[in-house]
Length: 283
Image 1 (cartoon, helix red, strand yellow):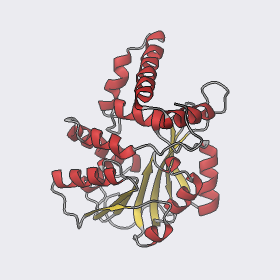
Image 2 (cartoon, one colour):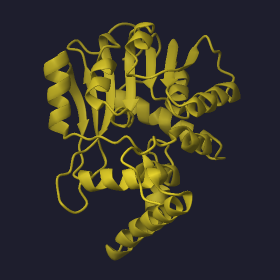
Image 3 (spheres, helix red, strand yellow):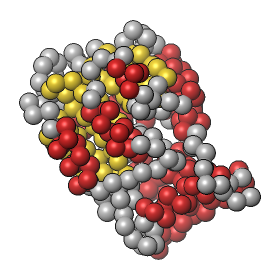
């Protein structure tokens, strides 16, 4: 079976359901909470509205609730993600009036218009999977309240013939239309490649997996990330400069934090409106 010209969309929700069902989820929730605190430079989110675009498992919506956000609004276009996030909300006994979970897309302007502005709009590793990344970024910017913050994580553009972004786009397209047996083989082959690269450089491959649970991590899972990386389609990318220019020049946001990469991973941004978060709550 050969892949067609129109690959299917990756089932992110299925991957997130596996992630949320892991017995290490509580530890991951603690790490997510701390990473959010560090990223935003805050001690809490008291008095803030937090919007989680493409919420997946609901991990960071949960983190925002634990940090005291007055209201958390999250949405995802994958129904299985909605079910998973709803299950997490019920597991932790959080009032739906405080944490709203909705089925919706960042590309659906009428849906977005029905939502309030947010003090923090969180779109980590999501907008490059919509099939219309720049429009998705514009729409996310539009939901940031005055004095609010926009958190973005966007795949880096790497322009090289071997191992560049274009090659990975072709790999993802092939994966999405391949039979499950071929997908399984690709997943195992990629994991073996990752371990081999670490071994060749005299680094312990298992250390990389353990780093997912150290104090500097975001609470993710290596195996879920691996499957997401191979199959995550649609797939777009941009340089850090392209993202900065777009958000700053088009929307007037100010860059507060930037972590760049030379790899195919994500550049990470925190943009704020000129006067910062401001308002109520903790500094």
